[in-house]
Image (cartoon, rainbow, N blue to C red; front, side, top):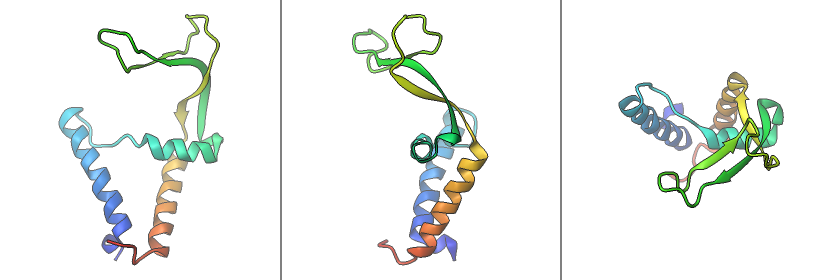
Length: 113
């Protein structure tokens, strides 16, 4: 069965952990899956709508050390240094993710457990 495939079990267990975390702390049963979306967008830029903006990491703030700071309205006057994804074609992304993971699981049924 699909549930016996170690790849499917691993992904399901990882997502369940995040679903339960957000249910307990943020009031919704879901997960942010930024890394797979970033990889998908690198492969197909049409999955996201992006905006060029200046982005930096705060290194001296008393409360904000390590925080990523973006300037989407260009208030600082600094030149954009990144394209930041602002929206995504979620349905297409999820369809492709499920398709790819399903294909991986189907072609690697005996992957090391």
